[in-house]
Length: 17
Image 1 (cartoon, one colour):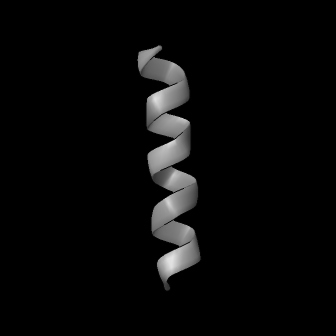
Image 2: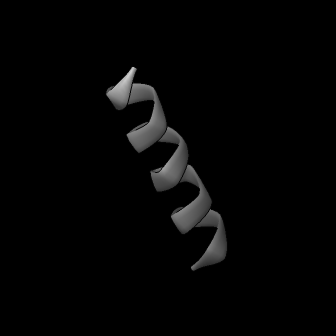
């Protein structure tokens, strides 16, 4: 489930930025 991890990371980065 690599895509799911990437999607979550993108969401976290978007929230962080």
